[in-house]
Length: 134
Image (cartoon, rainbow, N blue to C red):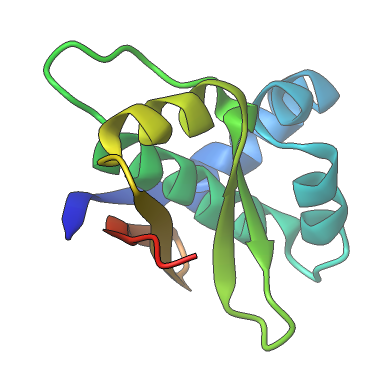
């Protein structure tokens, strides 16, 4: 069953400007150390940062309800599986929120799709709950 969906578009130039203006302060507030290491390993780090920024927003929208507040940026971490497919790791308030949204005896999963075409990066997230058969 679908718990929520979210999408976001991010202007890569805005991320470039934030990195230039605020440097590590912006990066540390918004991205986990693992995300920073991944993005910095790329030829155009700002593009990778922008996709992850859009993903965090899309996941937050998928988990939002009428009375929910903002999530901490670093509680949503975008990783890649061995094939390169983006996956989401939730911690802190994001994990707690999804646990509360997920029906009893169900396991949750977040499907994530990322794309970019300079100057934009997009993300689409689906939060899903399935019966836990373990």
